[in-house]
Amino acid sequence: MGDPIILGDLLAVAARSPELLTETRLRSVWQAAVGKRTATNAKPGRLKKGVLYVSTRDAVWANQLSFIKEDILERLNAELPNSVKDVRFASAGWSEEPSARKERKLSLSEEETRALERTAASAPGWLRERIIASSAAAKLVAKERLREGWRDCPSCGRLTPPPGCPLCR
Image (cartoon, rainbow, N blue to C red; front, side):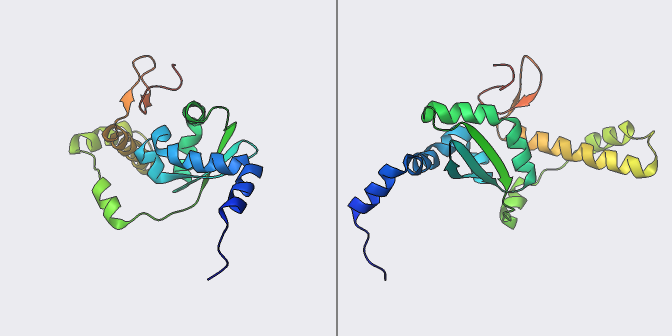
């Protein structure tokens, strides 16, 4: 075991690096600022010169969070005024536990599947399959979000996370 750390030394380091203290506080308010589901799939990392680096489960999460970056900045700065100037998201490629995937498993109804097939009916075979697959994926994402508490914005109709649409505020 190494030498003991003297509390005074630790406090001296923290005093020289206010961002270190802010990082610690950020971690404590992260879930409240972004919600449980997002906090599970995105973790705050280093805060450097006002830029918070966030690692995400995968590239999809990084991309989706980039669309609501301003909302996240607003919520974080409400908790820690003027601490975060920008947020950058990057995929860390975490793997998800099989039991978590099973819990989340959603599917389309036969009616929804038939509607997708009718929509893509006039496309050539190779394109039809791709249209159906991407439309089904989008529908499943929307179902998952609705299950997580997302709602349609009354102003623009966009599916939006709580507390409301970041575009219409």
